[in-house]
Figure 1 (cartoon, each protein chain N blue to C red):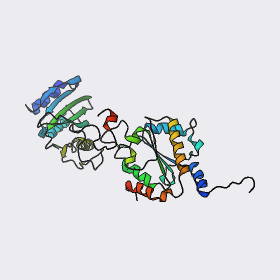
Figure 2 (figure 1 turned 45 degrees about the vertical axis):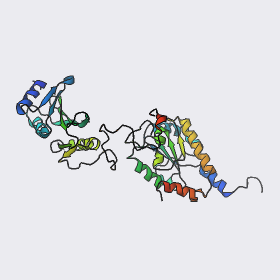
Figure 3 (figure 1 turned 120 degrees about the vertical axis):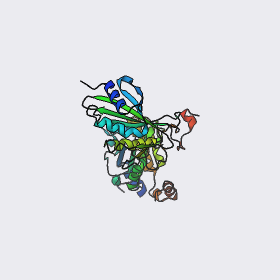
Length: 167
Length: 168
């Protein structure tokens, strides 16, 4: 083979494409959402990682970014947004509230979004700095890169979703 | 001549002799307690009287006094006379075992949502309310969270280790 060619396998090419063109869906309910706006703006520039295309239709998105306190009444809404996303899909819980309920240890607040949907990466902080959100995003890129094409068909993955009552 | 607290108290005691008790004026705001069956009559009088004209319901909510046996729940009405810019407040007390209170929705349209909220958090049963269902909490909730027998923390949580949160 000559110049401009390389040998690889299909799975690696797909992973490479996926990880560098993640379309995020910001689900922002409070202050973490403000930090995310800074992350996406020119100074921190999430677009450097191929994620400049925010989409507000879950059907076209790969990555659900949940930022802020999720009240119990919001739980079913969040779940529906997750269900509307097409596979493969990933979820980041940004900030203490989305990860664990944070300071809102009370009757009306969901104690972590992992009670209703599976979460891939948790970003700590109250709110996390843009660098932390970027770090969480890079962790997602690593996951996407390492994920095989067939993982979503595995029994383990189906079991996880069944654990949440999905399909 | 602007409406004074003395005039309001005089008119009310004239209309409801010996039935209104516990008159106070904290921070200049006239406050009293009425029997629970008279709440609509008092509201109607305050609304209709040509001089009093308390035609705006600023707020309506409840307070739970667990040690006040037989009168645990206080329902508080805040009224505003918009012409003279005077505010008053009155309370009624009900038994938590049978928290029935007449609804003020016929008199004040704004009472609709406020009574629903009071029902949602304290379980006050407003008789005559057109749609007394939960307004802010999840529909599946089976208790009234602002009553003081319930701790503020979420009792259903299983993922939080109390020791980690300094409550060990």
